[in-house]
Image (cartoon, rainbow, N blue to C red; front, side, top):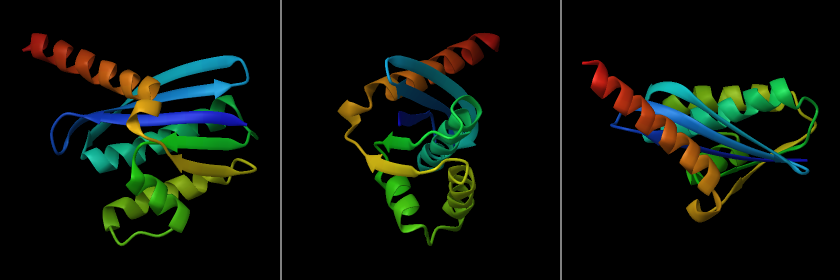
Length: 137
């Protein structure tokens, strides 16, 4: 079973958003971050969870996934498999489609202090992006 931690960092509403993904697999640890686009904070959290499952599909096919996030809305939407928010619906569909690639995917809400690695990855990528773009003008 993989422990997959995911978080997102966003500047603005919407604004540039980055995903941080930290994966623990037995004794191995993996870190990923990626640009998600111009999103709201909640959209970025959903997009980061989707990105985490894409990474797992590519790198760890057929594993059981324990996806952990500090976003209650992502966990509740995934567990209930429904949302009234039309923006979140497409993310839920994507999560469901990606989850089909694994024997089992479950999501767990964790406090921010337990999500420090993914949080740092997303914030570091956002800071670098903002710094690089500030100096390009």
